[in-house]
Length: 236
Length: 236
Image (tube, rainbow over all chains, first blue to last red; front, side):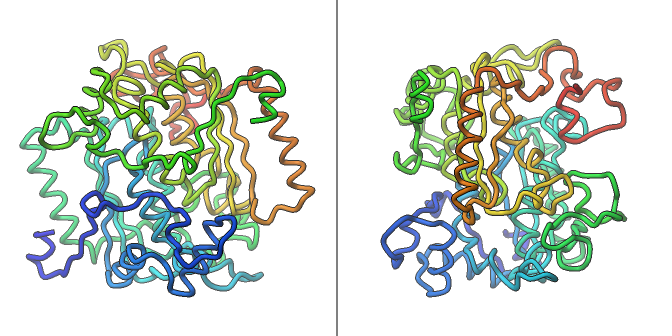
């Protein structure tokens, strides 16, 4: 944060543990909801539209709208985010805010995957792991780190419209020697200094011809016979 | 549950919302910890060894040890588990219980990925989605469901030793018609009736020759030139 401020950025921080962030999305998030069965999506939609969401959710949405770049920092726990951060997405990403936005028709399938409220904003993951980097390599037993992060980078960030910068992943951090720590700090500073100029991951946008609607499958003539996460990144 | 009991199984249920399950792993989970910086892994290891974990964590560990089969049911939120269930893994999977177990040497890298405390037990995911099944197909925009579930099935279930049965995924559930619901119930009943006989996903075990230690990369002569999640499943 001090590095970003030194070079002239304004910074807001959401330290979820320090904030004692409520991780679980539940009916208490929508104090004006009608009695009856809790419906996470429907109750969220009504509360967002009527401006009756809990204050902590609304404050985080305002921070997102304020930012031009968002950095998500977390340790990889069980190959994903810690629960408290997952609960940030579950709760802050309201229906009508981060999903269920835009027109659903024969030619468009909502403002998502490259369009949405975060369009024009950049996001980057800053991830630490206990495991070695080779364990997360293309043939490493944990699975390639890019694939492990796909549900977050593509599913949580690109989905509502963020341009997603390549992540900075620091491995084996609990055994990090001072020299490696210094090097990691330099890496991070370099990434912070180039947030505005780094080329985002070229995920394919949904409503611009690459996908069949409403099946939302990649057009047959693009990378035929291939599947998996990688086909959703444009070839260079 | 009633179906399982009718055919003679004993069943314990952990309904995380009904239990008001604490989702966030933090220092309060280890009431006997030494003051100082919280270390999720180290504090967990000490508390597990000294039997000073919080009672809710210990109770879930006991249920796991008791069970021969565990079914994890959840709606897919943002391409993963809801935070409350992620927090179940973060907290119940203690160091010394689900990871950090066994010998680390030139010939073994802990009891994990096919070995561990859950060896001999079966696990299955029961997942519901809002999106259509084609969106989760091999070329669907969300990514293939098997790849989205890999961090859970391989990283959370196979890791501590579970045999992982193919998941039952029910799509588009909020728009499900009565006939489709009846069909889904029949599918589920069929899966419950065959829990003991269904062939598990043939994930490669770590310490049985397929991986180089300590790099933990797949041996060069196995599926050469290939990478990604799929190489960790044995060819049939």
